[in-house]
Length: 310
Length: 236
Image 1 (spheres, rainbow over the protein chains, first blue to last red):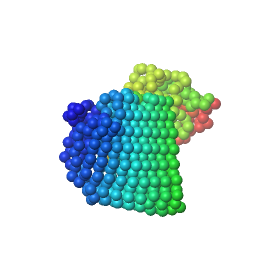
Image 2 (image 1 turned 45 degrees about the vertical axis):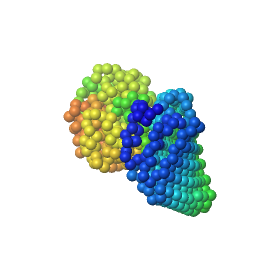
Image 3 (image 1 turned 60 degrees about the vertical axis):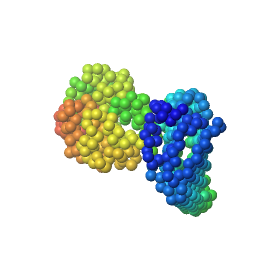
Image 4 (image 1 turned 120 degrees about the vertical axis):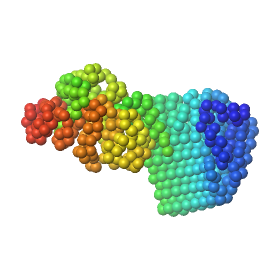
């Protein structure tokens, strides 16, 4: 498949313009086929496609400040198939970059998307990693993103996983971040599920260095018979380490949810807090919107989209 | 008549909150409903709006000549009924602009200006806990303005700290009246009721007096109820 034909798919509408942005690099793959790569200045990009999977390596030069986001697109346009992605990312000292990963599965009837990422941010590096998932309405997919992230002194990492369109299928996220002295990590995950979807969001931040910071924020909207589990784990193991876990699940119809915020302190001068809320959509909120003329379904959708917003 | 309530009764936990209540609102009328706390004023607003758990056990609600007892809340809203809650809900992630955008009669900027909130400051703010109670109530009034409903139910827009002044409330009411909206203004402040065309006094779930606002206010202040002389005769 050629890149033009790939980008002509209606599900990729938003991506077309993004890939044309002059300063940004990109990697575009459909299944285990690489369709396009563009290496921006200051980034060492290596991408290989094998029948077993994709291997992508990105190295941001020391002191580099990427003027625009670097786009990664991993898609499966056909209804069935497997996509394995192995991503290694190194952000050199004091480099700054935004990476937007687009994971697009428009008609999933039997799809597996397995992502293994290893990320290292050297001293003072700043990286924002946004993962945008666009799924079709069928829900026939298994999505398993895994990431191991190491933050050296004063590095700053922000990850945002968003599944705002389509069914989740079986989604299982597991991210682990280890933060050294004065490093900061923020992990945000936002998703929705319906039908028989099953979602597990497991995010861990280990605050290993003095004055390191961590925030885990998870938002999950479950409808129909979907099931969800949020596990937000923060370990404070150094003096002045500060962490917070904030989980919110809203449920409608027969959906079921669990939230397990786990906080652990291994140093007397560390401080970690948590909050979790689970519950049905509030009747008062729904009625306030319905009193403005929205149907119950429209009101529910508006509330959920609000909750899932950044 | 735009709204007629005939022998409306509502019971909760075995106790009558409203009993054989009769009330009529003319098209374009600004009608104040006065009454002490616990007399059923807010309950009446929820029943007219069709909120869950507020289905009357007896009586009829006639809106624009049509019986609407069976209609769900959103269908009543689409007929042109809207409610400004006394304690409005808060929403995570929803901005004031989006909330006001649900109405098409007036722009969000105009609506905010009319309730004394600077659009440049408030339009993009979320409708969450970061707003004070008074600010949230002003936005609620603005949301009703944005809809220009045929019937606006305003549940104590004057209550709480940092709430609109009587002059501001009168401005909002005038705008609704200019559009031809009918307003049921629920309050327990007689000075607020004075801006209305007519006023009714509620006692123990019944309308016990309807007349000119000063006269109704006099009964409210001096005797509580012209029938029971302040003893809540209808409770028995």
